[in-house]
View 1 (tube, helix red, strand yellow):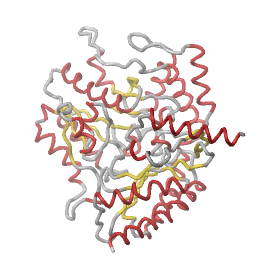
View 2 (cartoon, rainbow, N blue to C red):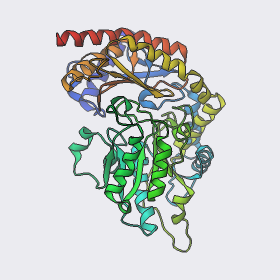
View 3 (cartoon, rainbow, N blue to C red):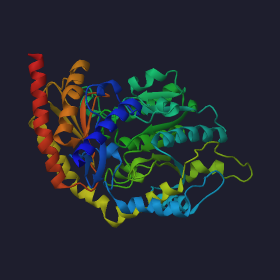
View 4 (tube, rainbow, N blue to C red):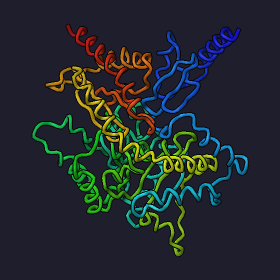
Length: 463
């Protein structure tokens, strides 16, 4: 009877999902003939589907469940806050959780980033930063500075402003014309850097683009410490130091987009600390609450906040969100930060990063593994047709390899990761920050045979 009921429940969920749930970034027609993965429970580094099958969550859901699944203590902080004050707005009002969280974040952020503007997620944080940069220069007597420099293939969000920063053609085209002002420079994909081109040229490209556009028209440069889309591009030595100099030379704000890279993902509170540069603004979300509640933030330097604090010329940042700084989300974030500190999670990442990377490097003997790159618990494997020439797969070949085989086979094997081709085809791995050698061994045990078989399939396809 129990088994029959469970089977009926599974069928009902599948039917209801197909009829009513519009999943994000999902080809809905792909589930006409196969089941939708339905995850019902999580514990530590693992999640379980509606049949009870266990999966190693090698992506932290979406680069965000940093503290791991099933932490009742984190959730309880939200419940306790709801019993006291479920909601009140931050529009001209304040409440203790938002105040305490803003102060806590300021104490962890680098340099003079002391002002925290809360949002509901990452795209909203980026949107806020772009609007703030424009209004900052308007109040500073330079209203012509409105353009934005970002990198090709970079993902900065899906709202119309953030989409102007996003450098992925396929995400931009369906919604054009976009908010004007978005300009792009090459990413730090040194694996694909043309022979004879120095790595230093990647930072200089930022200077060239600012000068081409006219420095009096450029408001900000927005960069991720490690670029997500394209597969965990890390910066060459000196890259951010030089970009900081360029921004200072041209009176341009530097925004560090850390929706993924903050809160221990790279072994530090912020990616800017990992790479030793000082941004004017940090945008963040995801791991701030370990995704136990939806929340993001824009963290702003005292210098950028200054025009809004002048009592002689009172100016509002004319922007906001109903749920920004929600008391329940703020309470969850505070509990999450407490746990990360109390349990030494950042130190755990630093101690285990080399073991995680060594496991991935060991896969280079598989013919389709071309490059391994990343930092902290944020790593990627680029897949190639030929290791020696670095020849990539065509669009049709990537489709057959990633969606026709790897994605489903890795999931069937019990590993959740990302098979992505927004750029060259990659497998991304970003496990919860509590993962260790045991989980690394499990990842390899699933990845190795599946990647080997995937390579064989592509070889037979070409034969």
